[in-house]
Amino acid sequence: MAKSYSSAMKNLEKYLFTAIEAAKAAAQIQNYYIGKELEIDTKSSETDLVTKVDKLCEEKIREIISRDYPEHIVLGEEQGQTGEASHRWIVDPLDGTLNYAHGFPFYCVSIALEIDGDVKVAVVLDSTRNELFTAIKGRGAFLDGAPIRTSSEIILKKSMLATGFAYAEDTISENLGIFARVHHKVRSIRRPGAAALDLCYVACGRLDAFWELKLDPWDVAAGVLIIEEATGKVTNRSGGEYILTDKVIIASNGVLHEKLVDLLDLENSLK
Ligand code: IPD
Ligand code: CA
Ligand code: CA
Image (tube, helix red, strand yellow):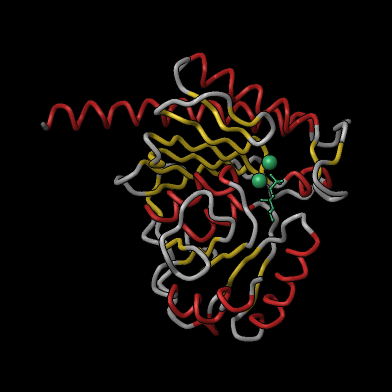
């Protein structure tokens, strides 16, 4: 029993090394192209950008994963997913593209590995600060190898929150209403612009909580595990169990969670 546990853990550690190598390779591409021609294109709306760097980074990450684990599949923001397998890597090759395209230094690479539907390994690399957030399920969360945990703030009025605005107009308007209603009930609200990194900031206590209304699995898969391993909490809009296909996410230090769910009141304020 003990032997099989430790061999399973060794595998998770190997997966983590691959994820770190892939994230570093992508961050290197991002840093190389900053300030150069990015061949910016739009996707779902005028503000939903994709650059050649998003595509190059996903290509590179896929290359490294399939070199080590050809039998695994990848769900990536730019290329989607082909096939089914017990091991699925969930990849946002460049989270914070809009920031990146403007040279605003807050963007990252996010890579998670899901095994039989459960995220077990997570890496988020802040490409400009070179801060590496990692987690293996059941083994805690780390920033540059040092353990991290969420803040212990229990008072909303003393807490700093963050949110993000999706690219769909109706969701932006909905969230602006929530932002305005909630802002004076807390110390302040930030809008940094890279959901995966926002979640890691909750994990290490730089933020007390985060919410967003329309995210995809690649935005959150790694960050959710990192928060949970850092003793934080992640739920859906009503405070119930969060699953990766939920668009709405509420993430916090844990101790603030119930108050936050009540304050946001997403059950009543969303269509
Ligand atoms: C976006 C960022 C942003 C969030 C958007 C996401 P992308 O991801 O995480 O912070 O508000 O909803 O789509 O497009 O930069 O990978
Ligand atoms: Ca993203
Ligand atoms: Ca992206």
